[in-house]
Image (cartoon, chains in turn green, brown):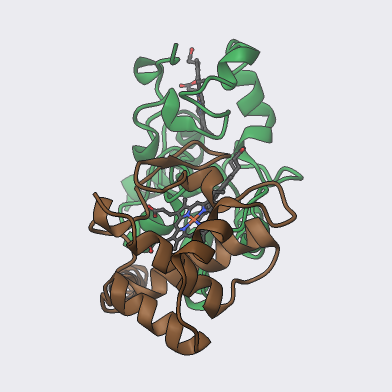
Length: 155
Length: 132
């Protein structure tokens, strides 16, 4: 009982450093990732960990799949409803999960700051394609691993 | 507990949804579109349709290559796309739901509208006509 209360008190504080719950940590991928998410949302790029964006961004993204960052990524209503529900339940609730005007992870201030050292020409490399392609540099992106140890900028 | 339950339910639903449509096979798919269009499919018309632009920036071959017998590449994300021609990719064109999904998306991007059953049947004739 006592330890539970202690944990409850410590949790928000620790969340800033470590992840207390899947919710709080934008990088962690939820244990129950539906097959449909992996299948549908990795057809054109890495399937992003849902905690990287807040619920409001996912809502806009899932509500406009026919106009998806310059391409048509539409799905049938049933799939949209199912994936939306899961994205809402697992959306990021911590500091970095911000709803940018274009609903991009890559537009967030923290993203720009963390990638300041990446040269402009690097983003355009053939092997990459752009900042959206996390996997080009973060081999563990699908697992939600963006640690320094696993970064490799393609040549 | 309720959360766990809903997760399980969801996973089951998702699995069911992923395997909803039975494999028809490329020839079967072509026959279905041709029947809906009530035409005799033409590989030549299909090739022209596939390789030309239709008033927008991209053609089908922009991402799939022409003939699409080798890996293609998504023009925006550069993600690899397996060959569309069934003789070069056993997974290709064997699922009606998947084909319909991509026709809807890709025709939207290339033509700004849905493709007609006749256009689909012609494209299928072109794709299934590719031989090793």
